[in-house]
Length: 394
Ligand code: PLP
Image 1: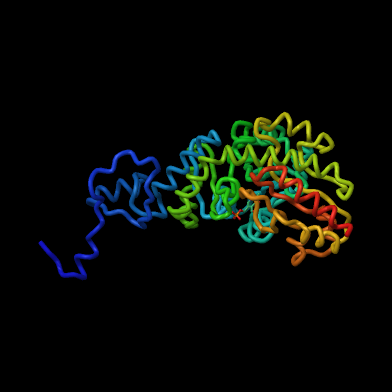
Image 2: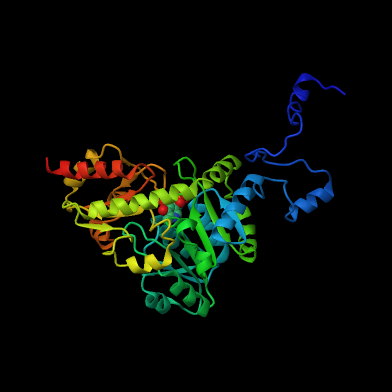
């Protein structure tokens, strides 16, 4: 039967020509919905059979989730529309009114904002403590505590949390331990293998790796992910199929990128530590770092100690601004984890929302500069940094 032009054009070109066998890369499935055979088919799909509606499930998210579950040694992974979507989904699905969560005070600023501004609105109490001191974590636990929440390498001073010590406190007290492992990546450290219950990432960083994807992921046991999934569905924070496909492609080169970036960071940390303009360098690879031994035990040193580092110049904003302008190769960028080296000024990132006294208390000195080390030739990076430091004296 043939239909009129307006009708027929909607049905043309929808069936692949010929047999598509074993493409080297997976297909992209942008469909927001899938045609169902009958009611039985709908009931099967609605019970978790795949696929019928993009927000419920999508092949590209499932493929990416399988790769991340493998990397993190978890059973299932939820793919979210951003790191913040991953964080808010975990907190809002596992905590309820009357619960208490103990959080590291050295975590991503917007995670702190969720905890301070949103969770109390749902009747959830939060205590912030120093997770580099497990004794503090123990002391903060109350009768209604349900969760411990931390990162491994804290931004921007690269303090390292001894996760095994934290997860054993979690187990003793029957608490869930949730880890944002964005800075470490599964190549450097795998929280689930060290007792954590849930690991999450901002995939906007090392998973994407090219500063062109915004995404997040949550990996855990099938039992925990099945508890989170109904809320994930209702919060509607699924990542779109194209970004999921792009992230899976990036994951294939992640090990190479992360290894080079981590090794470059070690070389840059050493070079900066030797420069007279630099008062202090914060990177766990340095023997002077307070958590160097801990990090050396915890991390896979075939990769390194993370590719984020900070260093402190004289606390003179004009001089720091001059240094930043002097850089020829390294750019000022409000993200991290990309393949190109970038820097930020952490104090400036918070200056609109906090007083000078607060910024000092948070350890965000005027002279502090943070670098997200990329995969360029480290000699070019070091030359750029050293010339920019030397030109501060001109
Ligand atoms: N977690 C950490 C450690 C981060 O650094 C960030 C962003 O910088 C996030 C979470 C939030 O990720 P996104 O920007 O993808 O929402």
